[in-house]
Amino acid sequence: MRRRAWLALVVLVLLLAPGCVSAPPNQSGLSKQAGLSTQSGPFAFFVAADMRKYAGPEYREPGYFQTALDAMRTVGPAAFLLVPGDLDPPHWAVQDVSTTLGDDFPVYPVVGNHDRAKEADMTYIRSLNAGGAGLPNLVRKGPPGSEETMYAFEWGDAHVAVLNQYFDGTSDTASPSDVSDATFAWLADDLASVTKPFVFVAGHNPAYALPDMTSGRARHEGGGLETNPAHRDRFWNLLEERHVAAYICGHTHNASAKRIHGVWQLDSGHARGKGDEGAPSTFIKITVGEGDARYDYYRAGPDGFHYTVTLSGSLVKE
Image (cartoon, rainbow, N blue to C red; front, side, top):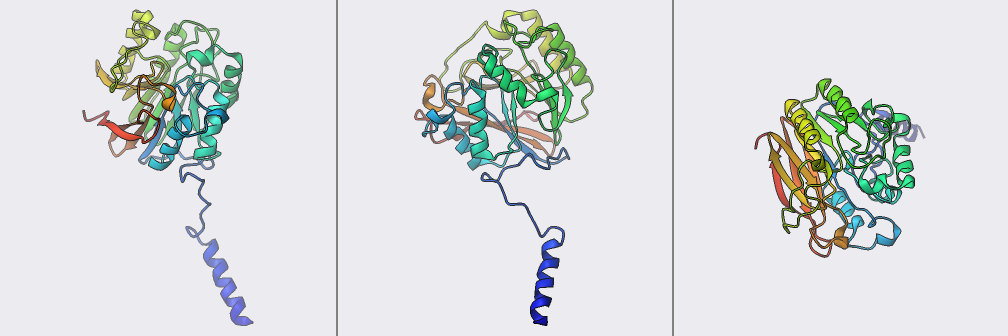
């Protein structure tokens, strides 16, 4: 009896010892929101956009957004998912992420043109960041009128500023897309305060609409931010001045990566799987740390399957 009691005590001590007990992993083995940390150290995050209409129960069969999420789970780990717009309907996209990557896996949404057009979508997107304090690791809320749809957060050595290009200084659903005076002023103040070595800015529309790197398809040329060249150039000059590593966007459904006047533009294309046959379905994995920030573009075949790396590079050393 004494021997059993002694063994039970040893087991209890070992279980309570630091480093001997770990929380069960989530189903993806990726980071969970509980206990998030902003400490320095290498980490990765995913970028996927424009899964619009191809998320939710009707599209959980293979070959759509769900298959992109399955591929992310396979190539992980990652800290969070950044979505540069057009989640529409956003509640299904977020639910699919939670089901696949973990209930608490952080999703940082960017307002897209199709999201902006539907009040139900905007209500849900605002609720994810209720009061400008609902998302993890926030360091700045948006300006009055866009407190919940514009924000900045930090993770490891990275600072990420998320823009709502449909904020005109009063409404966060204005049209057309632009980097308005109010948005520009907010971003300038935010970037002036950054101390992290790697800075990213995210918005829905590209500053420069480029053709898809694989299919060559061109869409939205001359639209989006290009409709106001003065504001676009003012915005791009600020990114260059503040040494922003990359501007991350979507909207075109065409994936591209190009350094323009000293700043990388990473267009994440679309994550609709076979729902868009004009260009391969895409997500990006960005790895930050150890003096570098690198990108890997994962693209699917025509059937929306078999995501493989088609383009890789450094945002710092190239």
